[in-house]
Image (cartoon, rainbow, N blue to C red):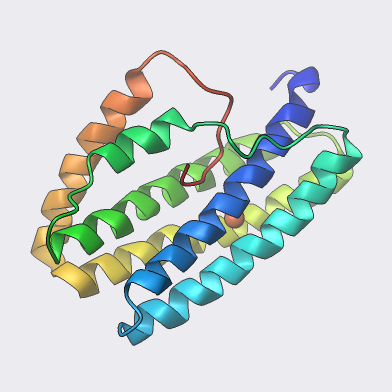
Length: 181
Ligand SMILES: [Fe+2]
Ligand SMILES: [Fe+2]
């Protein structure tokens, strides 16, 4: 990444962490009787919020404003493919979208680690890569518990196609690490 893009990237990343926390909490609010989901996603939301606090301080240090109203087109394409009218399809899709976003964000952090020279940011991104590696599998586990293994596998394949198409679209947004705009 070009050095001059780093402040904007960090500010965008902070917004993604906030959105990841809000998304996890919205699932907790939607499925309050699902005890494993409530426990695991409230813990995950707390972790994303800690990431937000850490990264937003770095954005401030670099003088980059956070744009909380920006649209993440990659996420929007995934969300548009979600089924909303019945269960377990609704929950399955919401959980799988999060699993995919988390998997991609982990990949990006791993890539980024080789390019960031700022010592403070290197440390933060190393810590975050470790955390994000755990998040995708949590969502996948919850999806399987919600809808069964077969339905989850089938739908994951469909979402991978949606994702491939979304990633092939010409870029229309700022860099996005992860999040659920
Ligand atoms: Fe995070
Ligand atoms: Fe995450």
